[in-house]
Length: 555
Ligand code: ADP
Image (cartoon, rainbow, N blue to C red; front, side):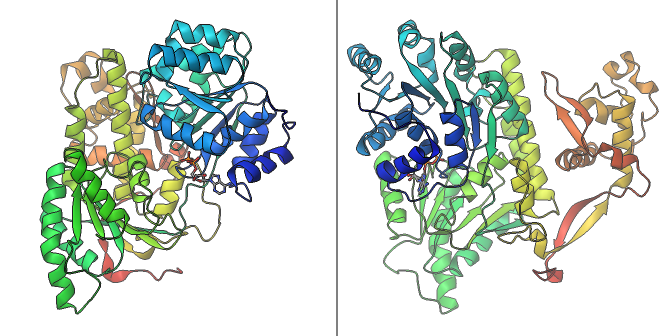
């Protein structure tokens, strides 16, 4: 094997320049790499496209031994390995697309030190052959990609990830462990550290605020959406956009409608910029034949067609930097999903706009989708229940985003566990909330009653029980437990259940309440709980936005 540079920060920078051809590290990379080279575990929370792979690829070149990369995406492994080999990192993968003989060859080569970077799927760690290999091989580093998959509180929980911690613990020489993810709330981060068994890790969260994005949002009835979108598109000739829809049927209908309406509107306004020989919009969804889907993608990426109307199947691995706007036809299932999809705007750093169209029916639909979600055979009933509840909570945060009157940049970055840095100038890329005044509804009394009820119930019950007690429910369960004897019983008998749930959702989003994890999540006090009992406490929720009274940007 070739002589190694000593694993120093200087060598890391030299490697970045020589192998990757980049002049400098991006935010967070140098710190993470330095820690890894020092033998310290790390957790890197960085947005997609920010350069996580470099953080383990450079150590793989500088450390003595093998770096094992655990990644859930078998379909992307070949590309990753080809990419690494191309710049001179000896890389390979073992997965189920290979014959047993081929898998043997790769493991033998790795054992002989001919492979520095070895990609495997988490299922592989459970096989005896791989365990035997790992017990004897010289493993310097284990990099866990998409590490949030280990947490049942995240969006993409995979039970196979639960075996990683045990695998690491089973190794005779514990290697350094580096975990990476693009999405992790505080709770998911705690899970990653705990379930992977990270030791005193350096946890680094970087760069979630996208300073060139303007976040717009509009509560709009379904029947008005097509016209609204057509006008928005017609007003932006010559610009690329993505419209995300929640169903395949809507993508096709909306694309067809836009192809008629947009040229009409543009002509009426005397605007050029839409090629009369080409459609304005193409539909894209997973149910289309592959050839048609690829054609749609090509037309969009090469700017032949300015607009793609797509389900969330669109975007994975698509590299188009000059998308000027992303419009969501419906509210997505989580902030994670919204951030990922809206974030496809403005990859080139130029000002771009993200608009979320939503209405109350989205909330109903999303809840119903979750309730009717099919069963996953790989999970036990308890695990499924956990996943269901955690998805409900991700949805609640999304609803909170739609309802908040706060700066949307601030809401989003705080959700990802990072405070906006520029004090006094928080709304970096601009957002509709910072430019609007709101009509609000005073829910102070409801919020105070909720807080008192959570107190009365000793923080030992979930949202459903809190609501039932406040409404004075006569349900057997409530009576049996004597919950009809607490002081707040029936205190909000005249307030509708959805309203109480809304206020609770907003209180969770704002930090007054906290949903404690567990098979039966409990509604407990959040860090700001004391404020609700303080004199002068005042709480409002947003109702409608008065556009006519926009505040000036600088206010
Ligand atoms: P992630 O895994 O975070 O989604 P990648 O590791 O795929 O991101 O990196 C995204 C892109 O950024 C890649 O093309 C990568 O080569 C590039 N990149 C990574 N680090 C740097 C850097 N320091 N300077 C410039 N480009 C970089």
